[in-house]
Length: 186
Picture 1 (cartoon, one colour):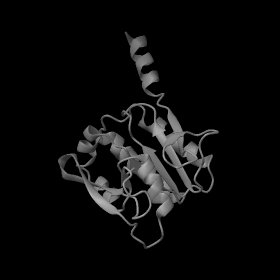
Picture 2: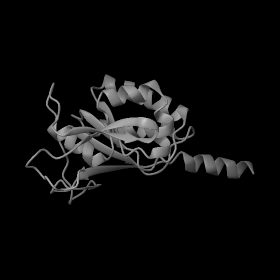
Picture 3: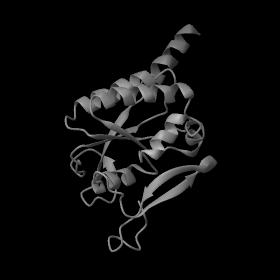
Picture 4: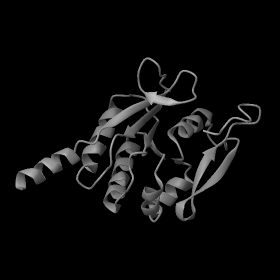
């Protein structure tokens, strides 16, 4: 019984991260490789499994190590597609991660947070602050477009608010007029 518990804890600690990059045409994201193109100053990491109290610190160490392997990173986008649920402990550890990366000059953006995880996260003051700072995006690709289109002090064209569960607002960037009009928004 004790051995089984130990094995479960070891497995929970093995959450992986996948580095994503835009495809050459910029219309999708895929695992970093020959068919993808890095964006200077931007690092996109997708969690490969859920985060729990048991593995969040290990995941944060892996995130920091990934940032350290990419000198010049200004923005880290965390794709949270795999995080069906979030606990308050995980959210608190996220704040620690933000502080540590902020000390290194890296801003953390969140993308693709599933509805159930948003319900918990949306109850925290920190989440509202991220929203106000334009650091929450419905998809990682939307965050890439926002990063590419950013200009200090400027408001990107086409910004609208999306209502997510419990009235939570997330910014979404739509194509600029004449640039993909009639195309689905990313």
